[in-house]
Length: 495
Image (cartoon, rainbow, N blue to C red):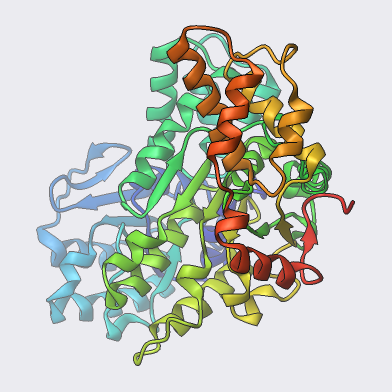
């Protein structure tokens, strides 16, 4: 029986109960949630929820939050109590992994308990935030890693946290999606924070709710939260990429009801340095309405190859916990290039893990990977199916340069009506978007120094002072453009 068949946590527990498992190792830090879930599912052979006994070294044996009259003495005592108990029940033992770590007697008694559970319908649950399975028990114990709360569980928390002013159904759904990746307790902290700051729960509270996620990723030191996502109107040119994002936005929103294979999963952006790859990653997060997290590859490899493998896996798994989100792997070729081989094969294992993770990651996690030299990446990374699309971001053409000048000027409050933007676009041929931005900054700086409005003369001087990358690194830029000519989809329509 299942009151909420869509609830992944209930389904995971129900599966092991239906299999008649008498001993379960539940890995989770959410003890109260685990107690609630086990209290909602009847044991095999029964049509009503069971009594749930809870034991810990500090509080002893309790039921319903109250101490039991009979108090077993220590870890061995509680196991003896369970073995002798004659009625169906669930016994949840908090942090019992420490009790069985160094005690052969406890491990043996647990094996006895498995047989007793089969005979009387009792279920014993070892609840712990860490995994510690002694070899003697591996075949007798069912291991379950409790999934994080899904959207339905979080919607209940949102309604409860809103007090008397329950949000509109659409807002409840959006707020719950913003909280996904958090435990119920973390979600409650985030809701209290938002209520304290703005006194209500609606769409405006989403950035405040995501603050708890920022705290989560900061604990690792490997992932950076990028707060300044960008709107699609802040990206000059690149119409092919923009249209691709617009077309897939609704598919991503509807991912829970779609086949996994058609849910957008990620793009690889390559191109000349300064042409907008990083800005495009921020725009992707803005279009999909998701927080953006950047995996710090330099920090991972700064620990040395010996630790890099573990840290990289830890970073990827942390991203799974904070989904839905956009995860940005910047300059990915520096981390996964086959140029950086090592005798121990660490790089090959990291690369293999990454390919597997790309295939199995949650549908709510969209990958935006950027690279300057995509030719350094292994061929396995580029085959169709790893990413939805590989885009090449080239030097902007004249129309795109005109648009980029306008974006940067308006963003800085400059009136463009009196400026000759066509002249600027013509004289900046071969420039990247980053160089155009620096030209705008130089012109505005010069105007401020002279204490007068920005004029064309300020741009004449700024245009003369900048030597573009396409000239100083002509051979390298030419090589990148030639390599990508027929190997990637151009992010801008072909002229």
